[in-house]
Amino acid sequence: MIDFKKLADKLDKALAEETKESLTSWLEDQRKMCSITNIYGKGSTEELSAQLLQSYQKQTFDSTNSNDSELDVTPSTEYQMAA
Amino acid sequence: MEERIMYHTQECRATRMTWPAYCESNMAWLGDGYYFWYEEVDAVHWGRKSKKRRDKFEVYKSNIDCSKVLDTVFDEESYLFWKRQIEKAAKAIMKITMVKPSLKELNQYIKEKASWKDDMDGIMFADLPFSEDLLVEEYNYRKRIQLAVYKKEAIKSFEFMYDMGR
Image (cartoon, rainbow over all chains, first blue to last red; front, side, top):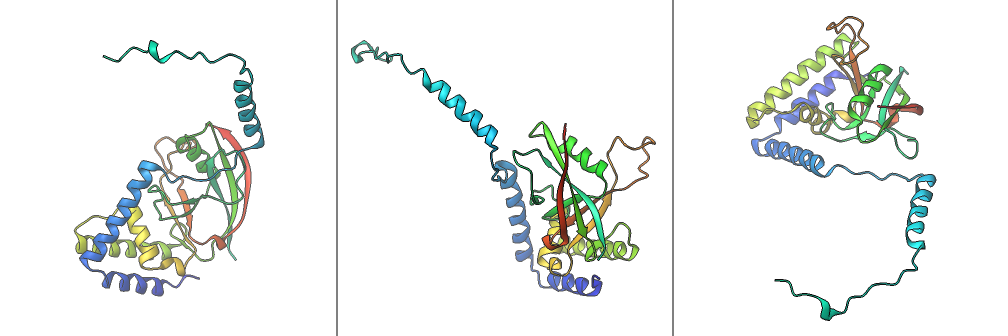
């Protein structure tokens, strides 16, 4: 059972102890926190599935596997100066 | 113990969740907590409407111990008590700061600054449904009920039900 009187007393006490500065500062903190979350998002960690990882690894391997072409290095003398 | 089955919606993830997500965003209108829907239809509607980052969303169900939940929906005494406290706090905050608190700020104040979270496990609240399931147009004959759980001990079980494309 919830004790209504206790809850009401706690709210009365909290409000009675507030000053303009304390309450304004608390409200500002709440709003700052909301803005930061809105801009950057809260972020969370998420486990990647084995299937997703395998697919990613395969793509990376395939794209680097045909590494048999030579690098075409242009001599520095052939560079044109930027105007 | 007064237990209720309630529903939790999340975006589809690579692995199934084993515990509900704790919501701290500014959309957490009853303050930071674990959010549940009373009716499955609202859980699905919420997934379709709000979980847009992925193609699919998931619906989970939980058994919640509501014996220490402030039930403003079905219990008249709790509703009248809640209404009085909200009005009292809102008036005081406006008088002290000259700033109108948002819904979330007001609930967060009551929960944290007045430490209500020590003496109750959550709050159940209702607004009007925005759902296609209403059989009579523009007649909100059913409530859209949400529960914010502040203490994880009140969550007795959590299990996956299904996923669904938006």
